[in-house]
Length: 117
Image (cartoon, rainbow, N blue to C red):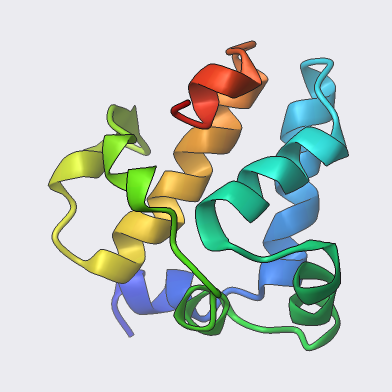
């Protein structure tokens, strides 16, 4: 199993609390993390909770996302040593988009800027 496949098989429900912890350590909120996820994926509170309850892996989480935001391509910069805009594997790029958005939140960026409005 290569590194990408290991990431894809990670359970969203196990990654999600880490996003929230990262945000909360910097004085941001779970609601803001959720808003980022809704914006990026098209999930809502109910469908997101369903993915958590189903123990969906990241591959399924993104494959079944109702609507990947068309402005996601505006997400640029480096996360985990990779430029997100240069990642060729679409699924890995989507995972890193989410990482990047949560990272920007934790760094104190305004939600409007994070959501590329």
